[in-house]
Image (tube, rainbow, N blue to C red; front, top):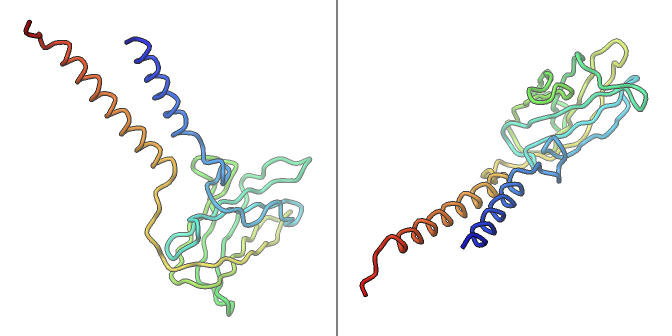
Length: 181
């Protein structure tokens, strides 16, 4: 009986570790890489966007700015994110702030009101690195949000724990009931 519970505990521990591991498919940002090490002045810029795929609503933009192989991460820069439609009209602008979770990243949330082909410009406003980088982004009509893989794993783990506890209680009840001889 003890070996059975030991195996069950090992299974639960393994599932728990599997459920909370980081999403490795999209790196630390959980977004789609749009620019990686794009030169801007004397710095290099990397940009990720989420939701995946881009849809009407809030577009989360994560930005990393660094000084290249010899330089470190740049903090305290002013970075502006501008979204334009195909004709060049500005649809939205946001100033990136230093990240809440990771102080070495900048983050901006841009409200996208319509689907279509967009151009996103990330402008660094720093005397030593003034410049901008651009990328194309296809924005789809909004869709129902898909649960994050971690949330699905956590729900599966919770269901398994409930089933195991139910089985353990049933086994205890069977032991507690006296049998008629």
